[in-house]
Length: 528
Image 1: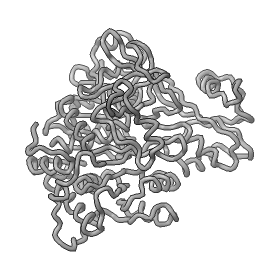
Image 2: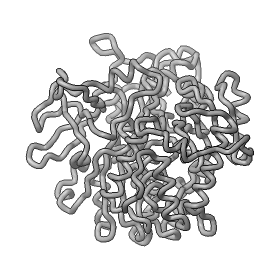
Image 3: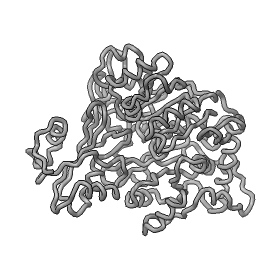
Image 4: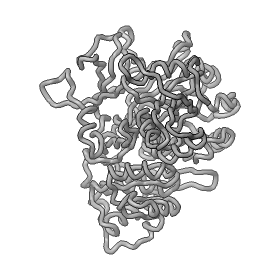
């Protein structure tokens, strides 16, 4: 599907799509509740005019979006793109303290959200100095004068930031990965070609807007002329409602973390009676054990393509995709391969010395190419540590991203396989989490003396377990309630284990290996 004229930023691209497919459905929330491309384009224009004329925002000013999956959230995203203001989705249910750290990093000029969320920010002293607005009220403001949006949109370059996506940080301060218009334009073209997306497709948006998997949902659909079908949090937690809506609206493309698919398998929602409209099932963000995945393949492999994808937040969501075949299930041990990197992407596997390793050896996967972002917003130190010069091309500047993922490339067919992490960063329910951020939150509780969080996988399901030594009496319920005020729900350990003192290794450090082994096998005497 060609889009004319040539577009070099996302605002131009959406305007071209909306002009070409004006009457086509852009957003389909439920039967009888849709929005066309024409109406979404006009709504985003109203918001964009209010941003620049009503509020005086200029290119580069950050806008935080905190609404649910409403028309206004998607229109707000597009409005920001049209005037060159990078947006950052934040979790409206995130603890106020964590929101304050995010706002302190990105220093937004404007926060758009619903009334309840904004009222909460107003009562949280010092959370942000940004202007707080409800998008529907902002869109009703009359511009002080004519606004030439076309000129402003045309002035946006591909190198300008499109969005900031926040991920967990080991220091307790979330990291804001910056993606450019050019980064996302590359993703749009790649996803359209890789998954043969057309205007007849209906893509699910089960991923939260503040989670980087939603980048694929939104841009692959709305910027390719397809229909996006948003799912609320309540719908994703109700298997009957989830599969019923997919069947009713005849969705064709699914993307989620494996955990959600395994949940549907557990409650027998993938029995073959439902989800028959899906022709492409894409999953990524964590491992999908082949022993579980084979059940899905046996049920739907005749009508549905299954794709295992990989890509860090810092590289625009996805950079590799592997379509599974029956041959991949000859051996049911382990995880499916990542396949090969996208055609215009590059990658190195480097050893501890920073030099490329031979095929077959395990090392750190480093990525190069047009999906590699600009770094971490207002964080030069962590940017310099993760975005480094390609050692294979010392003669000229070429930035590569150090993923922290351990991988190997099969010398026989070139397929990539993941072999864990080189640090304490893990994937849990698809979210990338620094275990140290949870530990830092635990240590902020005055009655906690020591705390360590370990991550394990059992039967393909991810588990977070916290080991805690107390200096004052506290119950599990109290600890969990206090922790919920410091970190999001997806960082809350599923189990708390109390010890009088945490075990140490020969170096005097907390013995994380022993604690992980005890979680998996048992043996330490736990104080209940």
